[in-house]
Length: 120
Length: 106
Image (cartoon, rainbow over all chains, first blue to last red; front, side):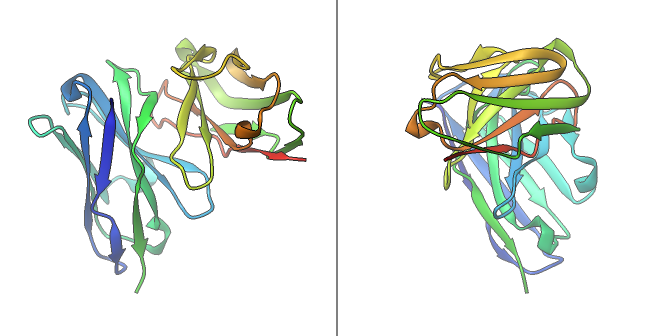
């Protein structure tokens, strides 16, 4: 059974940093791309970033490039999202999602999300 | 950019729902997915490649379309189908989502 467990969310002041983690199990992690999607309270889904199975290719939404960094540790079956220079508008639930194989970035399984609140 | 219409669809159980997703550029390989999200839950993949049901998706759900115009149809709404539906193109980064269509009970 595929399981994705996000952690690392919490309350952070504007300008602060957080590192989100997503522990994956139930599938061969190093064969699948992975994605982060966020959802502000009461709003729709926003794609944030994806990373290829090997970690060699990363994709970002332009508005977040330079502040957020996606990475993965295939030896530990874990996906990361480093959030820097956080702003109030980054307040959201952050979901990690498993993608299909190769360059097929459909999100076929989702974690339950971790809430990031940016506030002073 | 993906646009979805209508923003809200008010229907009764047993009725047919037709949701539209329009892309500003052609989506190659029909890399278009639909997701369902219920309150307090993570999204769930319903359809991919425009018309292929994901594992566990009931056959009352169907997807169609190509290039820039896509449709999700629910033939007979069940109580558990009242939710928000998002389309997403996963052809070219950024892998954008549409703003969603809320299907609520009339």
